[in-house]
Length: 136
Image (tube, rainbow, N blue to C red; front, side, top):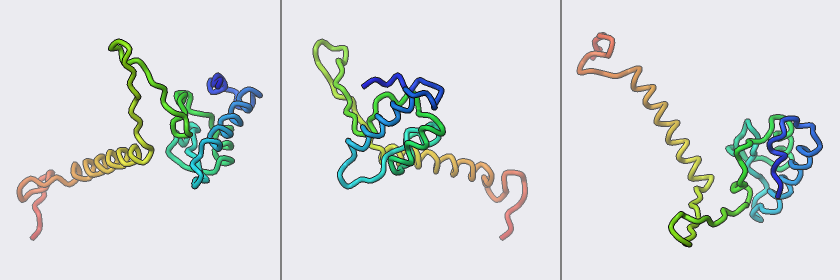
């Protein structure tokens, strides 16, 4: 499928509009039967928010699509097998599920929050970092 529409900056251009429609159709055609929502590939959501296909389409018109998202793995596209550089052996690329990726990001965010919090209230012995004593 031609994805050159993803590089078009003018989101009113007929090729961009047609590309978005084809993408939404592709996503719907590859949805698991029990799903009604898709990951939104707009610049703002960056495949982190699920919404209806109609909402995702609106987002793609309003904010554009993540240009680097050229393998639609969050929308049912399979990874191709690639030569790994060792003769004729092909390996299948590992895919990280969206849920696993979200867990990783949550862990990173939690760690950053914890680090920020401890930096503000680090206790050294019986004294606070700025020399104030702890009241008992």
